[in-house]
Image 1 (spheres, rainbow, N blue to C red):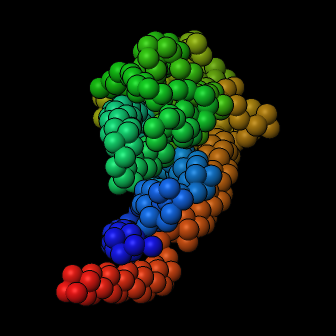
Image 2 (tube, helix red, strand yellow):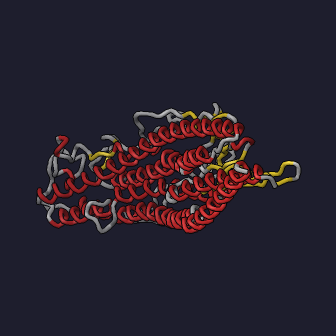
Image 3 (cartoon, rainbow, N blue to C red):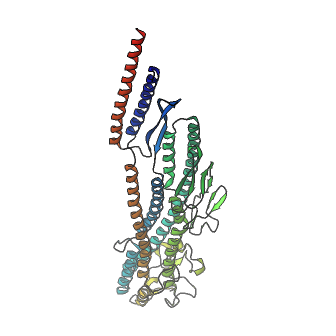
Length: 485
């Protein structure tokens, strides 16, 4: 080996050691950076004419467990899906109220029945009659407020869909731009690891919206598809389109054309299927809230309102009413027509004949809604019949409730139980998804930068650097000795 080759070998070693120290320092500095893939230096020996000629830096390798990353992204989507649905049902449960709360639907029904019982015991008491009317008015207000909350949740979901669609479109464009930069860097022989970190972070930001699978492509680029098979990015990003609205009422549905669906590259996408193209993330959950969960909740509330209206609209109750006339609870002042049930809870009102706020008279609650003049102040017959009407078990005519006959209060309890049961099921699933997500993230961190191992590498690099420097010094001294002869 000549002195020149010895010097060349040592200098290449110094260069490789310097590059290795740079990689270690980058790893240590980003040990807690989310989305950072640990780097290692790829080296190989070089020979010229069969003679060793130093070391070659092949490049920097970025270490990421793609399978673990994919599982964690699927877990992000599952959490986004269940947390969105759980949030809606939790708010609905709060709106209905639990039986132990005086302001709950069950509590208001109990207050109404208690007020009627007190009025039946003192039919001559105007205060007792007024308490009964106020209790009935509270039921009407509660059902209207619950319906308003449901429609507000649908409108909020519609707005969230628009925001997430915009985020997806921008995010896919960002990933595509990074794909291009990574391809250019790879073609030039530059290290694209930093760009790959940015791309991973950009994809992670989208993973809770739609379950995303990453597929490698040439030049370090990637394609993205949803778990349902929709191509989101492959060569160029897909274009997702959606139109939001400014107001939603119970009658508005996607199937009826009043609410927007989703298109990908101008192709309509099924948003309600459990195994559809976008199923599994928060985007699908927002569609479910707007088009399924909230619609079903509205149907239940309307069915309860119908049951209440029909109990007091029964022709056998209150002979003073004209045939077909509304009862105590009305559909916007009119008799209820079963073909117009949608949104009934929003139109529910007290009969003006008995409501002082609408110019009615309290005594008609005792003497009959159609009575022309006050009757015997001691007659509690009608009030007793109203109490019986509330307590009589009746099978709900709509809403998908149990076929078992229920009193009005029992049906209010059933309404809450339906929502609570669904909420408990979703929260159980959310708890599992959260625990799984936490475990996957911990596994990702465990496979990230090991600072202890990096410090050990740094010691080896330091020793190798010193050894190569010593070779350079020795070669220089020998050359100086030769030149001085």
